[in-house]
Amino acid sequence: MRKIVTSVNMSLDGDIDHMEEWHFPYFGEEAQALAREQLFASDAVLLGRETYTAFAEVWPTMEAGDFGERMNSLPHYVVSTTLTEEQATWRNTTIIHGDVTEEVAKLKEQPGQDILMYGYGRLAHTLLKAGLLDEIRVWLHPVLSGHGDPATLFFRDGSNIPLELAATRTLDTGIVVLTYRRTAAA
Image (cartoon, rainbow, N blue to C red):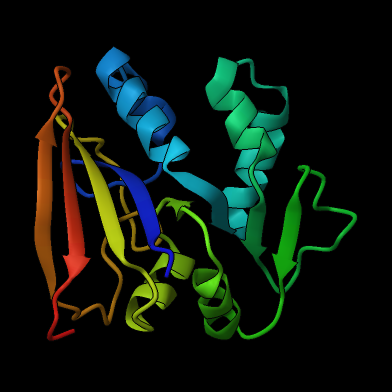
């Protein structure tokens, strides 16, 4: 069975948004190599509507070598009740309109590599609660963003789900990548 892995960039004060203000100074060569490794270990991308919209605006024209080619050529699955086929302009996009947990469970059962998600919004929270999200990779940045409200913080109300630390990796720019998995008790 395939794993669903979400990768989220976070400031020390829990901000997972406003990345344009704090993320890029820490995204050096080592971070780029790890992001590439993560992408190439996957053969599909699963996104919520907001992340899909942001990615679909920039990635099709992004000049990012083999990373960009890989990002643009992979199948993109977007969970949305409002996105139409006409709005889904990023190639290889499939819209999941129905029962999210049922449809994503079917994706996990297909043969293949990891399914990669970016961010930790409503979709990731839903999948974690349903037992479908296998790993959360938090890229903890050594910066306080000074922003935050419930929609832009890692925190999600009702998330009493035990996790275990599976791995840590400290990058040369000070980012610490923390990999968590659900505990057996969860």
